[in-house]
Amino acid sequence: MKYIFVTGGVVSSLGKGLAAASLGTLLERRGLRVVLQKLDPYLNVDPGTMNPFQHGEVYVLADGAETDLDLGHYERFTNCVLTRSNNLTSGQVYETVLAKERRGDYLGKTVQVIPHITDEIKGRIRELGETSGSDIVITEIGGTTGDIEGLPFLEAIRQFILEVGPENAIIMHVTLVPFIKAAGELKTKPTQQSVAKLREIGLQPQVLICRTEMPLDKEVRQKLSLYCNVPMDAVIEAGDVEHTIYESPLNLQAEGLDSTVCRILRLDTPQPDMTDWSKFVQRVIAPKKRVKVAIVGKYIELQDAYKSIYESLTHAGASHDCGIDLVLVDAEDIEQEGADKYLRGVAGVLVPGGFGDRGVEGKIAAVRYSRESRTPFLGLCLGMQVATIEFARHVCGLEAANSTEFDPATPYPVICILEEQKDVTEKGASMRLGTCPTALGKNTLAHQVYGKSLIMERHRHRYEFNMSYREIMEKRGFVIAGTSPEGDLVELVELSNHPWFIACQYHPEFQSKPNSPHPLFKGFISACLAHED
Image 1 (cartoon, rainbow, N blue to C red):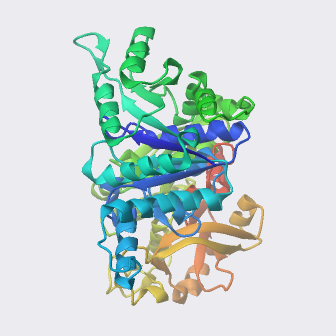
Image 2 (tube, rainbow, N blue to C red):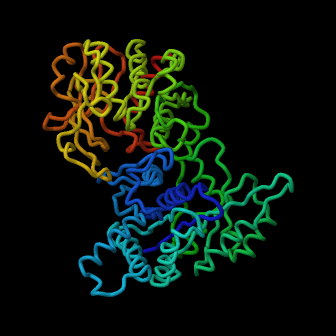
Image 3 (cartoon, helix red, strand yellow):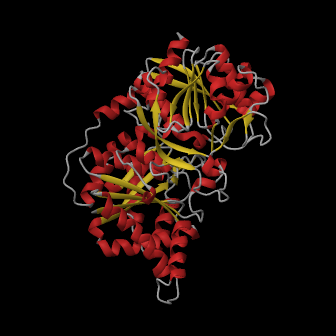
């Protein structure tokens, strides 16, 4: 078993997750079995209760774990199917250690960061290696070197490398090499300081991933090599990608990253075949056609809040050799100025998930615009719920219809809380989470899109369609196209008199990959192209 630890220095948001995922792509293409893991230093047990404006989207795994969005990169860039063991937070570590202390597992010893906290961290890394059946474990450490909350993780890695042997583990350090415009040159000092901080802790990086806006010339590489004690061929340039994040594996391959890693870890593997990946990237960069799609959300200001949705649209667009021009619309703007101003001229409307009543009326207005203008529509999670509310109000005549999440006193609760959620008081990891089956009606658009009768999709919600309103809504053309196998939960709806209108309670964006786009997104883009024509 080989281990690669990915650390970051100087500043945050350097792209450690993307670097780790890209390396995973290259190593898989060399025939190696790879698994990725994220260690997050924050004290939250998981990011499930964190504000999207602070943390970005919560990525849900098949087993229901609510995790960091970097795990989305891992699954999209590799063949990994991740579980809760692939994301560890300080909160989980301390929670586990304190539970052991309360049970008496430590036999009355004083519980300390070393060895108890560090042993727990090492145990989770080792457990993943033993149970995954992989050749290589790539572990990303969140945060920035020098942060006080990250020190236990770095100390655990120091001990871990000592235990498995330096020939079986390396550190790949992602760092910033800034260009100072006034001086007209790249500066290596921030990287030198970052590596020095690592070496104080007892960690020596074997590979440097240098994030830079300007190419690294030979002199800069030599300087970094000399002062950071890293071979010249292990100083890897990682400039900003020009068009798409999917260029990253190709750029890092051109820099020789995978060859360097295999040499250091003594892995004899063939060169990676990136032909299909290159073709996908080319379709993203230079598509034959383009289509305009509106995203009507409540966290539009933050790019990472809908990360998986944006990537899924890119995958679907590339499958049609089509570029996606995103029109990002704040639902609150529609509330103030109407949907027509923001949505006229788009080829499709997508309403994503979210929580709370802010912007909901704007989302409902966006659904109404899509239905009445016969514009292709895709609703995800809350998107299905607002589609239900809109239809009940404006087609079925239930003018005050609403969700009990937004109006507990509504006379027409067409969306209500799940029965098993009524007594839930704790917010963390208590929703309906993870993969659940959905049975599709045979004569439905959904069945046509998926090409099968039973599908498996990932969920994250507390509220559901109220079956008491099924009959009145179906009479007016509201089609319940997918339900749980028992038929008691509505999972997918569509409209009988609309060219392409689908809304689902689950999150299909969590299962889309570059060369395997999700059927719903692929069908949505196909409908958008037809609508534009």
